[in-house]
Image 1 (cartoon, rainbow, N blue to C red):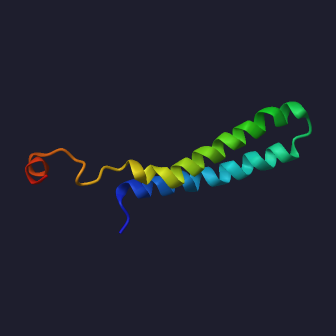
Image 2: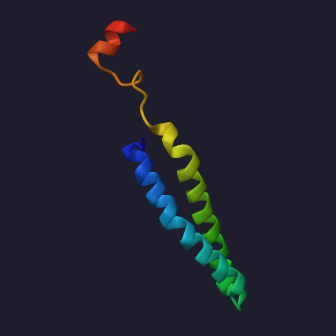
Length: 76
């Protein structure tokens, strides 16, 4: 079963992968160094965001034991 946050993460990854490929292709095929100087960092930032979203976003979801509620306060 897929959680709600996993669906959003998958959607972001699916949208960013073609964009990252497009920016990388544009930076490789750029004719001037001025175009490469801003396309390459943009591609690297896009890749970094893609990696962070794909790997670390599920670690920020609250665990049932971390949620503060009267029941958890009484049992712990």
